[in-house]
Length: 63
Image: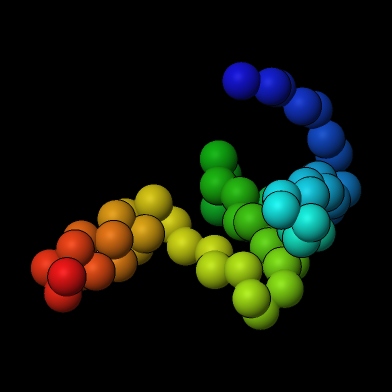
């Protein structure tokens, strides 16, 4: 695992399979919470882990 230190609102840019994906962390008014902005092409699906697992499980049931 790589650990990268960035300032809030500084983008982390990833290139995956030739696609550019940017992640940006934002502070929130609530103590200890942050929000993430994700900028990716529409062809790239972005889901939280539990949503991804539910989609994967549903696809498995349809096969």
